[in-house]
Amino acid sequence: MTALSFINLAVSIVVSDPWEFGSECGTGPFFGTITDANADTLILRLAKPITYRGRTFPTGIVKARHVGAQATSISVKPLSANIILLPLVVSVIAEITPVTTKEGVVVIGTVERR
Image (cartoon, rainbow, N blue to C red; front, side, top):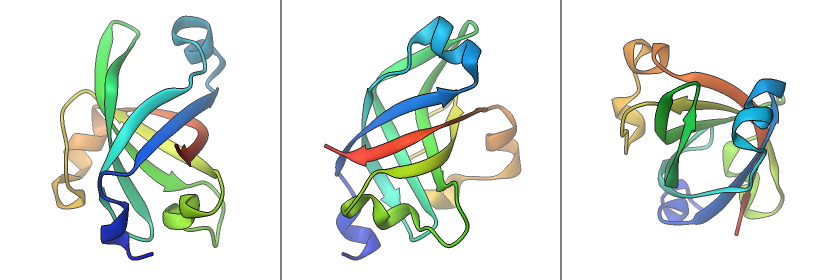
């Protein structure tokens, strides 16, 4: 599958860390749709924004957690991932900057296609 074929793919996220996230929000699954993708990064629009520590997060940036893994491997198996939840809507990878990610919250979890 090409990275473009991941656009509009429905996915689910289960969060394992930080512990406080699970206590406040639950561990999921949280549902979303991929709006942009390349081998290293997926951009997710969450179906229902996540509210954590008084902030609302409608977008997730997903990167593979392990060296050598690719974000697009979700086409065949769940992906262990580092996820940056963003308090703003980002739809394409080109919109990601250090300024946009600075406002986010990092969680660890698993992403898989639905």
